[in-house]
Image (cartoon, rainbow, N blue to C red; front, side, top):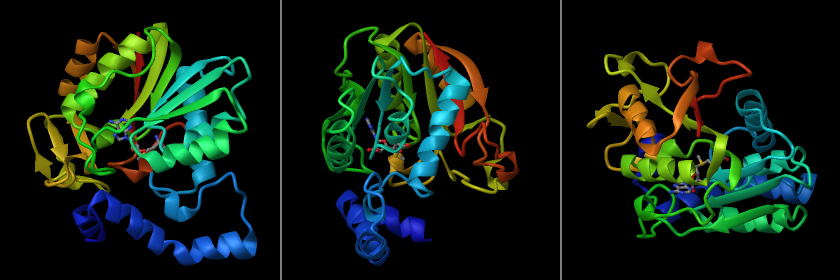
Amino acid sequence: MLRKIYYKLTPGMRMLARKVYYLPVDFYEKMIVKTNTNTPSKGDIYVGSGDFVLQGKHQLHLLQKHIDLQPKDKVLDVGCGIGRTAMALTEFLSSEGTYHGFDVVEKGISWCNKNIHSQYPNFQFQFVPLRNSLYNSYTRESKEFQFPYADCSFSKVYLFSVFTHMTIEDIQQYLNEIYRVLETDGYCLATFFIYKKEEDLNKNEGFKFEYEKNGYRLLNNSLEEANIAIEEEKLHAMIEQSGLKNVNFIKGFWSNFRLKSIDNDFQDIVILKK
Ligand SMILES: C[S@@+](CC[C@H](N)C(=O)[O-])C[C@H]1O[C@@H](n2cnc3c(N)ncnc32)[C@H](O)[C@@H]1O
């Protein structure tokens, strides 16, 4: 119910609602406890619930485990948000490694520049004003966007909880772009909600994705980017079209909480290779 009301708000109102909701706890932590400044205040963390630092460390673990992330890697973090994974990577990437991240929400990128890039110059963040009706009110479409990087410039690319908030056409363009910017033999880790054609999602403990479309399902019928689940066959066809190869799949626990483990995530993990 609360989620439905939240989705009815404009992107700006959603950001404001979060800020107001967490105002007392943020005031307490900043003025009384004087919490670590390497963490954004709770009202500014618009990228999901859970502990900012622990989730970042978990994402780093998944990158090491599933795409063999190394300190010297040239990394691209698509939809880097407010630096949750980047902050964890500051303690892992060496000065020979490079990190680039971009996102469609300016305040996340500003926070990253002020709090991460200022201390770690090999961490670069870029704001791109592209439309995403969950997060902003811009009009430029991601399906026409070319990543601002040269061909073959990254050894590892990852997207945590980004393709679950994009339209099918936008995802296809991003898969194509990931193929272009990855080195040969480079890897990409991306999270999705994936279901099989015959699967009955109503039995799920978590998200049920009630609204069926052509090869995908939505959590909210009027806000496509709120959360999208893609039918397995359709996703495989999209991956194939991009030129990438699907080399591994790690089932998430979004449909069955008993599947939770240290090596998986709420969302399904797909490993792609160029
Ligand atoms: C759930 S948040 C996850 C953020 C980050 N990956 C993390 O795990 O902390 C989804 C992010 O995707 C970003 N995003 C949505 N559409 C995007 C697009 N077309 N290009 C780049 N980033 C996008 C949002 O602004 C948001 O920061």
